Amino acid sequence: MQQKPLTLKDMDCADCPIRHRAVCARCEADELEQLEAIKYYRKYAAGEVIVWAGDKMDFVASVVAGVATLTQTMEDGRRQMVGLLLASDFIGRPNRDSVAYDVTATTDVTLCCFRRKPFHEMIKTTPNISQRLLDMTLDELDAAREWMLLLGRKTAREKIASFLSIIARREASALGGVPGKDVAFELPLTREAMADYLGLTLETVSRQMSALKRDQVIQLEGKRRIVVADFDLLMDETGDDADGGVLI
Amino acid sequence: MQQKPLTLKDMDCADCPIRHRAVCARCEADELEQLEAIKYYRKYAAGEVIVWAGDKMDFVASVVAGVATLTQTMEDGRRQMVGLLLASDFIGRPNRDSVAYDVTATTDVTLCCFRRKPFHEMIKTTPNISQRLLDMTLDELDAAREWMLLLGRKTAREKIASFLSIIARREASALGGVPGKDVAFELPLTREAMADYLGLTLETVSRQMSALKRDQVIQLEGKRRIVVADFDLLMDETGDDADGGVLI
DNA sequence: TCTCTACTTTGATATGGATCAAATCCGAAG
DNA sequence: CTTCGGATTTGATCCATATCAAAGTAGAGA
Image (cartoon, rainbow over all chains, first blue to last red; front, top):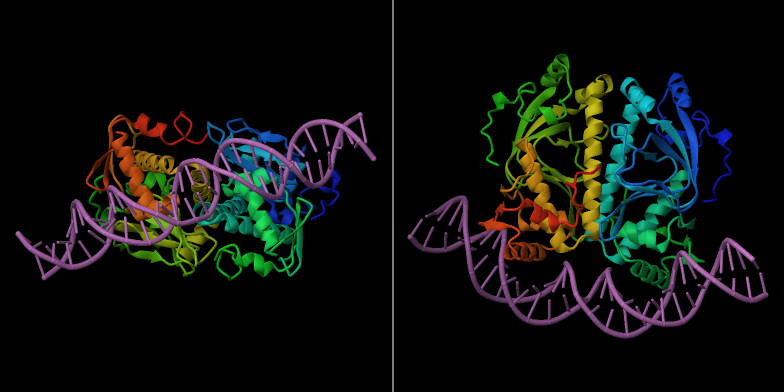
């Protein structure tokens, strides 16, 4: 879970530690060269807003390090998270120049940005990129639909367990594995942000976390570090089918 | 709302009444010809299951007429709808040969199917099609995220009002307009299916429909036909921002 | 025409999670 | 080390929606 100490120098597309999963995953050498020409890096501090809903966005980007969120806010302040962006996830729309959701850095975030106009040109001429974008968008759509089941039908306890297992799995796969017996990870979100993710209040999140701890499903080290001794036990609490949970 | 009487003969890609919004929207004449060669039609009766979650699917398809749904089911029977497919919507995944959700016809449905393998080949060689697929997938993702806000944060009353305005808007746009003062439409879903859409029980759906009727926001003609005298009044109940509601 | 049955409405009651309120914890800044 | 303020936990109460139950409705088929 430890953030690898990256220097900007490390992060060109060819050597990018996330390259295999990011937008340039399928690219040929000459295509990577083109991408190199239109890219630059940006850093945001934890809590900083990257773009406000409705703002123009003159770039698209891959997350290199850190965690960002997409959230929708209603007039009276009710908030719902609709996207959780970890390393290698993509931000932005090729065909739209403004963004529909607030994008916020919840930890320190580094983005690998591509200027919008030339990136859009590349899509039209580079099948590898538009293919990869389609794949990533379909994965996001699957994630959104699993999330809809969580929001619409799961109990508070199931929501928390599902969230923890999602984070555990994504952190594990970022390190190139699957969660085994002993899993430990840092929560990248406050209780309030978790509540926005899960469609709950922060008090309910806190209570259910305490309940899972009391019932020995998880251990809490401090407020943010989670230790899962038996991952199957956690999975049992999610309400999901037993078979791995990966969408067929 | 009346289903136009289509014969199969009418429905080749070039003349297709939904062509401008479907997968072939951007295609050139020769590309349409290729599509013609790999397509065929299928019809399903109301209530029929088109594909079960996990089943192999040897085709992708556009909805020509009728309404289909995507639903997820938990082990104990809790169900959440995660997709509502109207005319011109797309079913299937280019890169996956099985499907993650139950696909069900809720009215009589006609699909324009394309055999999977050759369609997949076309994607790789036809930028117009992969572009169009990306656009459609991004639109679906936007819809899913708006749906997530509904599931996570809206009250039962707001959910019903939102659902009705979504249906009204989609029906109106299928006829090439926007909902004006007097809108009338047929609900394509039972109360139970509406409940699965909204993350509610069917009893709550029924009660809230009655409440909106009592409060003169809608009229009910029979069980399924909705008349909205003042669309703005309905919009006020959705909890959405005033400005049209289309995502920026 | 008269069932039959699936769909829908309505009523009574229970309850999970929200809301309001107050401690407590803990890391960062002095 | 101490202080401060945001983050978190915990408690008490409320209420929106679920659940259980029963009655009403309408369309398809005999």
